Length: 444
Image (cartoon, rainbow, N blue to C red; front, side, top):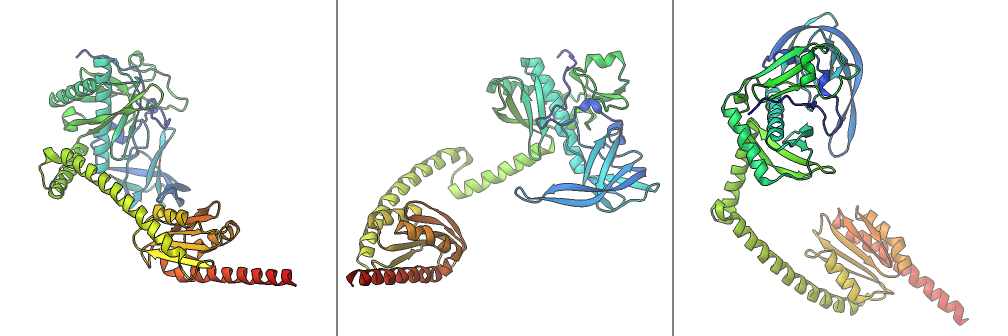
C-alpha cells in the first residue's frame, strides 16, 4: 500500500468539537503508555461542573479547576474523550484544554506549589488509545481502497462511529476494509508521533486546514508506517499489534449524503464476543436448539404469537360484548356502574364502553393489579366526565386524557378504586337530587 498523507484533521467530530491541530505537548502525548507522573500544582480556583444524573436531569457540581505544570491526563479533544485518574488521592472528574494548559476538575482543592503524583485510569486510557488508532487506520484504508474520505468521527462509550463522505457503502467494501486493517495489525506496523514546528514545510503535507487561533506549541503528526500520516492531539498505540483486532459492526445512514461506519477495536471486540456468546448460550437454552437454528425457531414463534394474539383479540371482543350487556342490566344503571378485571387492556375497556353507550350513566372501568398499577376508563355524560376524569386520575395517583364523554389513563394505585367510586356516586346523587328539584318546580 503506497504511503499517502491524509489531508484532513482527525478531530472534526460530529458534535463540532475542537480541531486536533491544536495539540499541546503534554506528558500524556509524549508518552501515552505512562501510568503515573510527578508534577507541580500551578493554580487552583473554584469552579462548577455541569453533570447529568439520569434521564435529562442535570446537576451542578461545585469544586476546583486545578492547573498542573504538566499533566499525564489527556484533555478532551480530537474526537477523543478526556482521561480519568487521580492527583495524589484526589479523583479527577473532568479534564479540558484551555490554550496551552489543561484544567483538572476536582472536588478537593490542591495547594499551588505542591508536588503531586498523577495516576491515570489505565483501562480507560488504553481503550481510548485502541479506538483512536483504530480510527486512523480505518480512515486511511477506506480512503486508499475506495476513495471514501472521513468527514468526522466519534469515540463512543460502547462503539465508535466514522462518518464517511459517501451516500452509500457496500457490504463488499466494508468486508474489504475490515480484512485490510486486520492484515496491517498482524503485520505489526509501528506507529510514531513527531512534533513539528507550525512553520515546518512538512506540515503542509498532512495539514488540510489552518491551525486555530489559540494554537500554542508544536504540531503533532501521528504516522502509521507506510500507511498514514495525520495531525492529531490524541493518545495512540506505538504499534498496530496493540490494537489486537478491529471489528466493523456495520454501516448506517448518516447525515445528508453521508454514511456512518460503526466499529470496535481491541479489548472492546473481546467484550463484544463475550456478550454475544453469553446471549447465544441463553437463547440456546430457552429455544432448545442449536445457535444455527435460532433465527428459524424465533421466526416460527413470532408467527405463532401473532396467531394467538389475533385469536385472543377476537375472544376479548366477544367477552367485552357479553360484559357490556351484563352491565346494562345492573341495578346501578342510571347512576354509577363500576367493573374491575385483573386481565384486560384499554381496548377491552373501550369495546365495553362502545357497546354500552352510557349516555346517562357513569361507567367506571379498571384493569390491572388490584393494589398496584393499572388502567382506567370513565365514560358518561360529557360535562360530568370532563369534571370528574382528572379528579379520578388524582385519586388513583395517575394521569390521563379525555375527549367527548370519555376519560382514560394510567393509575399507580388501584387500591384506591373504592375512593374513586365514592367520588362518582356522590356526584351522581347530587345530580339526581338536582334533577328531582327541577322536576318538582316544573310540576308546581
